[in-house]
Image (cartoon, rainbow, N blue to C red; front, side, top):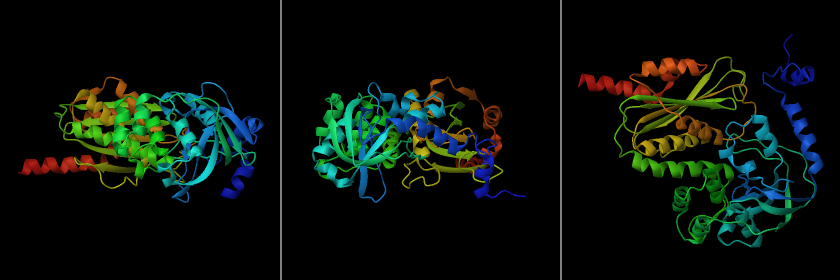
Length: 410
C-alpha cells in the first residue's frame, strides 16, 4: 500500500531514508539543536566574523543585526565562503548554525543618517578581523536554523535590546575611504574589488549601507547584495573582455564540491554566456521527478538587462569567475557553464558554492579540443547526464548552429 507523505517520517524514523535524501533532516536538526542550545542565553558574548544579516521580509522596514557566535577567538572562517571549498557540507552547516542572528527592525533608509547602533553594526562589517561583541537580547533565542539557496545558513535569532563592541574594529584604509567618499555604490564595489577585498566581504559592506552617495545610502537585504556584488563586478570586467581577441580552440574546465559538479566550456566566438542547471532525481529541489530537468538563462554580447529569474543568483555567481579568467588571459569567448546537483547536496547553503567551485576549476590548466563533439565526449566522463542532453537545451549553441547555417547559405 502506498505511503503518504504524512506517514513517511513516522514509519522511517530516520533509518530507511524513505524521503530519498542522504540523511534525515529531522535527525540533523536534533543533532544541531543539542550542540547549540547549551550555549544560548539572553546575553551572547563572542567574536563576530564581521557579519551582518539584512532580511528582505516587510521591505523597506526589515530586520537587521550582527551575527555573533558564543565563541571568542578567530571566527573569521564562519562567514568567509572563500575559505570553504573542500570543507564537508555538514561541517559548514555546523559552524554556520552557531551564529546567533540579532534583529532590530529598521527602515532601510536609516543607513544614510545612522544612529549609534547602526554605526556599530557598520563598524563590525567594515572590520577585516573578528570583533568581540556583546548582544543583549530581549529573551533567550529559541533554536532555529534558516537555510537559503542564496545566502549561507545561520542559527537562532532574537530581537536585539542593546549592542556593545568590546574592542575597536580593525578597518582597512581602502574600506574607510569608500565609507567617507561620496561616490556611487557601484564605484565603491569596483574600487574595493580592485584593492583585493574579497567578494563576500564586499557584499556585506554593500548590505550594511556603507556604500553610495550619502543621501542615497540604504541597507540592502543580504540575498540581494550577494547577487548585486557579483553582477556589478562581472559587468565591469566584461567591458574589457569584449575588446579582447577571441580564443582559437574549445576549452573545458571542471571541478566539484559538496555534491555540486560544475563545468565551464569556452567556445571560439564573441562574448556570450549561458548557465545550465540540472538537479538530479533525488536531489534537494528535484521533487518527485524521476528524470533530470535542465533549465537555463543566457545573455548575448551586450549586458543582460533583465534579472535571470530561472537560474537566479547562481547565474551571476558563475559569470564572475568566467569573466575574471577571460580578463586574466586577455581573451573573449562564448561560455557555457553546466551545474549538476547531486543528491548528496542535501541542504541549501547559498550560491557562493558556484563561484568557489568555478574558481577552483579555472586554477587548473584547461583541456583543449578542436570541436564541440570532442568536448562532449570528455564531459560524459565527468557528468551523470549525457552531454548531448545539455547541448540540446543550450540556447547559445542552438543560436550558433543556426548562425553557422546562415553564414554558409550566404
